[in-house]
Length: 189
Image 1 (tube, rainbow, N blue to C red):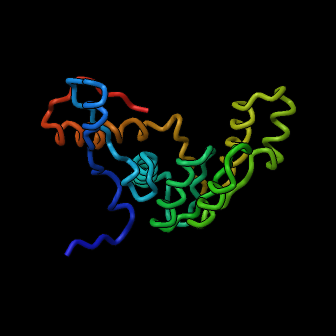
Image 2 (cartoon, rainbow, N blue to C red):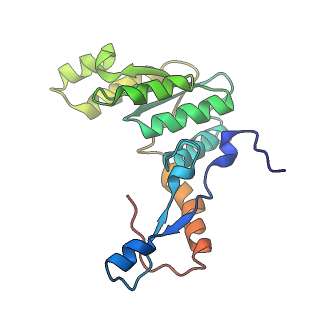
C-alpha cells in the first residue's frame, strides 16, 4: 500500500506527455513533450518552489514552529505556500495584488491563509503615495515594517535561490530521466 501522509510528499515527479496528434497534424519529425505540472497537489509548478523555499528556511533556522510565512503574490505561489504552510503547521499571510481574482483569495483562505489586498494595507498605501506609485518601493516598505515583528519568515519567491535551485534538483533531472537523456530543446513558461 502506498499512502502519503502529507501533500508535501506529492510534489514533483510529474509525468511527461508526448503531443503526438500535434506532431502529426503539423507534420513534425520532432517529438514534443510537455511536463504536466498540474499533477502537483495544487495543480501548479509553484508547489515545487513553495515546498523548497519553506524547507530551506527551516534548514536555515529562519522558519520555526509558531512562525508566519509571508509572501507578496498574484496567486499561484500564494496558493502553494498556503497549502504547504498548512501541511507543515505554519500560519501564512499573503499580500495579494488587487487585480487578482476573488477565487485566488478564497483558495488561500481555504488553506487557512490570511489575505490582505495590497491597496488596503496602510504601509503600502503610504509608500505608494510618497513614491509616486512605485510598486517596488511600496513592497520594500512593507517588508521593512514586517521584518521588525518577531516570528515572520518572508518567502520572497523573486529573490529566493531555492526557487530556481529546485528546478535544477528535481524538474531538470526528472525530464532527463524520463527521456533517457534525449533532450534537444527545453522551453519553459
